[in-house]
Amino acid sequence: MIIEKYYSRENIIKNLSKYEANYQIALGKLIHLSGIKETSYEVDFKLALGSIYELINDLKEVENLDSIFEEELRKQTAMDVLQKFVNENMELIQSKNFAIEPIINEINDNNYFNETMNEVYEENLKLYFQKYNDFITEELAFQIKGAVEELAQK
Image (cartoon, rainbow, N blue to C red; front, side, top):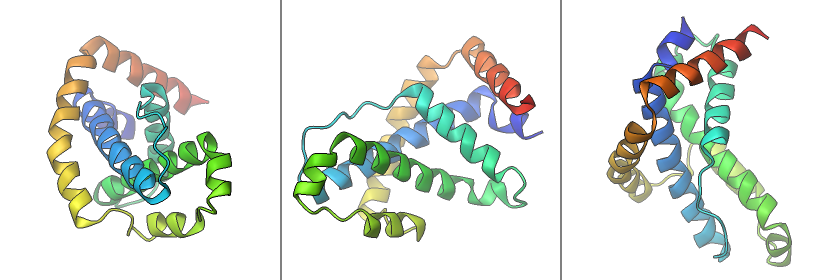
C-alpha cells in the first residue's frame, strides 16, 4: 500500500528533508533573479506535508512512481516556492516586470535546477535530514500517517 511505503517515519523524514533542501535552493534562485531580498525563508511544515501528500495522491496510479518521485517532488517544491514568492511580492514583481512564465517552463521542463544548485542540495540535504530526524518522532510519524489515511478515505 502506498501509504505504508511513503508514510513510514523514515520516508516522512526523507521527503521533508528533500522538500526543504529544494525549497531553499529554489527560493535562492528566485531571490537572485528578481533582486527581491525581503522574503521569508521559513518552510511551513504542514504545507510541506500537504504538498507531498497531494503529489503522492496525484501520482499514485503511475506505474513508475518510485523512479519519478524525487524529480516530481523537486518540481512540486519549486512550484510551491514560486507561488508563495509571487503572492508575497506581487507589487514588486509587477513593478520590475519580472516574468514568471519562463520560470514555470523551466520547472516543468526539469531545467530549473543547475549543477551548482544540485551540489548545494546534496550538501544541505544532510542538515535537513538531521533536523527532521530530531523533529519527527515515532508518535508524530504515526499521527501523520493516520491523518493521511483519513484523507485517503474521503
